Length: 217
Image 1: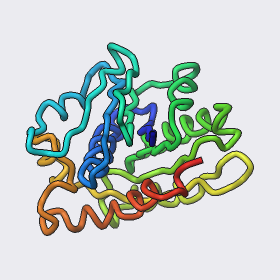
Image 2: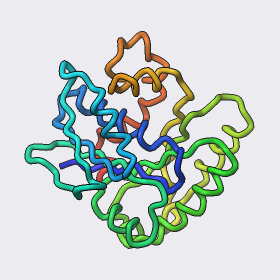
Image 3: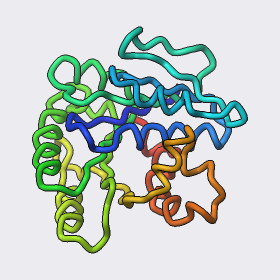
Image 4: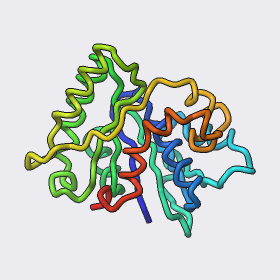
């Protein structure tokens, strides 16, 4: 079973948007997908509740309230982590994942918070041993802004334990398409291609990586 964790201890980084669109991407291509919501706010489960029965099925798991109980037959498990995940809780979540995607938004506050969080993440044993693959994504980007330029430079410079580059895969723009998708329990991959072409192109480096062996330890 493929296991993908969307993680950032800072609230408001867009974890749920990323997790739901990753789940929608894999469901749309025919995989049996489960979406585990570890946040007591249940934002991912609320997204699923708005999803029409005519759409590819995604099974919801209330991991915050009932623990992580994955149904049989799941091909891809996407986990939406809560904010303020640190210490033992961080280690416990990371051990469940093959792949971690860290969204960071272009603001000085979020960049400083991401720097502290990523430093903590690098001390988790499975990360130190390279038993999990990690990548970053710039989220809610407005191209040409000074904040976006600074975020890109910061993410490009990040290193893994041992000095290897931490992959910075994609820059996802601030787009109204994500709001439209969230309202209907959809991913951008389930709209007409012409309506979300630019956003799909932004996602391409990330989806290619997630669908490849390069994102699996």
